[in-house]
Amino acid sequence: MKNILLIILLSSAIACTAQTYPLRTFTEIPENTYLKDTNNELQGYEGVWKGTWNNRTIFITFKKNYYIYDNVLKYYKDNLIGKFKVLDSNGNILFDNTNISDDKAKIWGGKFRKVDDKYSLSYVDPDLCFTSGNIRISFTDSTKTKLNWNLYLGSNMITDECPYYNTVPFPEALPKEIVLTKQ
Image (cartoon, rainbow, N blue to C red; front, side):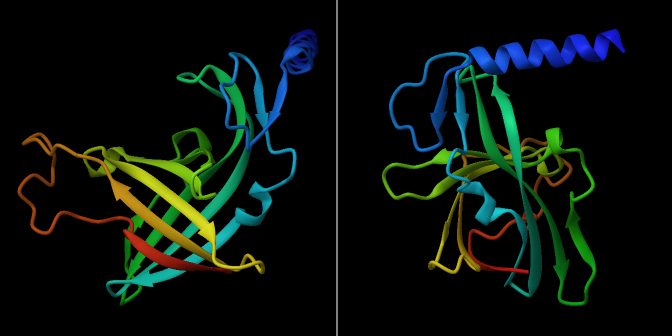
């Protein structure tokens, strides 16, 4: 009980001392501050989204994570994580990471982009030889029921250690471009 109380007090002390900025802060952010979803902008993205491409159906679930520490940028932030399931035209599961823990999610959010107002996410898939890329999402209109999705794959080097080395075509877990509909 003492340990739980100590953890709560320590977390509260850190949260109280951290300076808070809104998600749409486009200036340099000092270390140990908090980029907070003060306007609840991520809430509209939360939930299950569905789309169809290349005779496949994808279900992506976005969930908001609160007060996550970014080891690279050295500050706390609210962001989205994404988990997905992909089915072929017969309903067979091709990819499914919906049951992995949140800290192992293959899709996680960055922040809103100043240039085009899209929300930017990162994608790294250890199960597909560390295929990686950047995803940009944005609503198509004010109803927030349709979501534009664009995946920009990185320069992924596939070595002979990869189980899919020389596999043609290389497995694609995610569409490059799609409009998703909120379920």
